[in-house]
Amino acid sequence: MVNIIWASLIIIAILYSLVNGNIEVINNGILTHATSGINLVLEMMPLIILWTGIMKIAEASGLLNSFARLLNPILRRLFPSLPKDHKALGYIASNIAANMLGLGSAATPFGLKAMQELQKDNPKKDTATEAMITFLVLNTGGVTLIPTTVIALRMMAGSRNPTEIIITSILATAVSSISGLTLDYLVRRKNKR
Image (cartoon, rainbow, N blue to C red):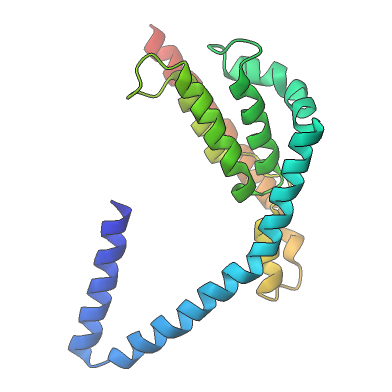
């Protein structure tokens, strides 16, 4: 659906520029913005590689397992349908850790592994379980303590104080997480009645 929307917007813009005789604007925009996009990827790649590597080291060293044990009392309440030692809980904790550091790219593999583990226990393979929905809500609203990717983008854009967004990021993500999890809990309770 999103692909259709983007394709429609691009086609409308090209047709509009043809009708108005501004085809050079489209050509210049395509060339300049394509170069900007490639430069952004090249500038962000070292940061993503660094933090993905750090997360792999943390996983191999057992640090993420320790973090998972620390989060276990909270995760048990959020995911009451999962057994205490379910493999998905470790991946969920790793995903939360990466999201807390603002590393969405490093969090994605852990999120996918968590969903794969949750899917193994799913009796209806074409329908999401309560645990899957709760994880999706938690991952989407994920509390970010240090938005490293956004800070890096602000630094690349020449911001005078790229870290000034930390407090507002914490507040925004805390509100979104609490709101999402509260709504998830209320819907789950309503469905059980």
